[in-house]
Image (cartoon, rainbow, N blue to C red; front, side, top):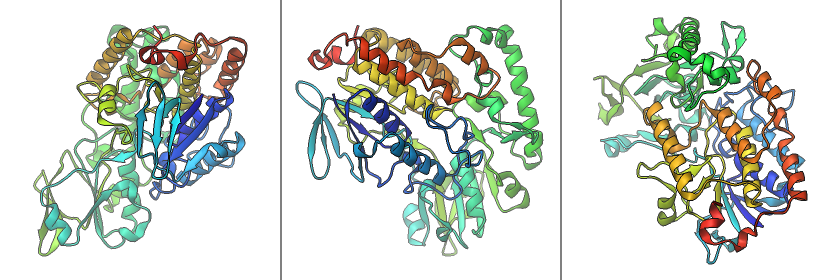
Length: 506
């Protein structure tokens, strides 16, 4: 098939690699001039590093270089993806610096993609533009006067160097990883750095007690198993017996140790709620230098409040906070998340992808219900993003070959709606419009591979209970699919199917 992939980050490149191995004709579009997605040079802010260690943040068949540090920098991750392109000869598939302005369903099937210079028909479209593609910047009362007085507002991710912050009063809005990363960098040169956060999030030290690496806590099946999934089985039943007594006790111990190690009580930065809340919508490592910066006064944190309005005081731009304080604010950097949008799809198509809450209706986070010749990859925010993307790409390859079955449209919609309702409840609505699978990344991978009958064996999974997940354990999955499809004919010609069956095989 002739396949277009939009996005050249981890998800887009993994899909290109798997689908070319299955002999499809693939073209990858990205509006940036380089590969990388969130790691592109056009998006990296100073101090950007991975949250995962290098051993878990990699594709199954392409480990990160041994020379890389435990937590690679943004530049190193982008270089890693360049090496992936080179190793698997993907450069000929890339159309970098080329923005897809619209993708339109074609009659009788496939998609017509339009760029500024051409239109091309494809049999299938894979959306891999990323759930962190469009920064969300709040609008505040008083912006016009604020800007007239020299104040600036920008997404935190657009900060490229210290020239924009040197000698200025900077307010960082948010408390996620990017907010804390940026605050540390800003504080090195700014006159003042204030972090304004509606809600404190729990942070984990990279090494608990200065000894135990975070990867042994959260990047194992045991770490994931501490959080109750929709259905528990096996060892998880023990962890969650008697109202999750064992799991909650273990999480409480980690939380107490974290508070002591980071000195959160003395700083007044113990989050509301239990440590188990860390996984409602995100898992974040403590940025090196952030809490020491709060302690030495180079970073101020205004917790449990928001910016009420922007205003001018004595001719200078300021931010008025909901706790009554007014702080100088030459520059407001919004680290307030992203909007999950697919700008190249029409409102009509987008409407078919979303439920009334605006959440994505994607079976296995991949397959839209009722929209033909379309799949998604990367719409499953995961602790193992490269591996999750690669296994989703395998699912897409199998689906295109009609090598596995999925539920009927009605059953798929019911399944997705139930999952969304559960996720909405457990995250208090902070599930990124249905695209967040944290902390159940491995459950998602298990389900994807379970559909295909290509899951890794029980012995490998048993090892993952106590040791960090090694992506290399999954290196045989793609070759097994390639071998299967070489000997087993497709169940049907996908291009000859009607619109409904082209998407869902009952």
